[in-house]
Image (cartoon, rainbow, N blue to C red; front, side, top):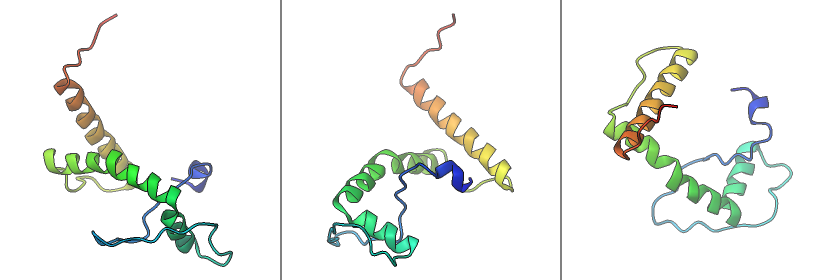
Length: 111
């Protein structure tokens, strides 16, 4: 992935791990001008808006990875190389999505 492909995307990237039960103090305002990219992201995630966006990610995206790991038993890639791994991941995701459609009773309608 190149920098150009994410140029206009508002990213929210974890900068570390928070322990369960720890109260994280929210902050406001922009990060300090001398902040590194990691510090700026940490600041962004500690804002009220950043916490709300990241909380949604946990509910929408993360369960899918857990389901693929646990229900499909997919723990590691079989192939090497970026392109091969990308293709293998697409196959795993396609299989997961097709199985979800099948279990939901979806039927392909022929035109």
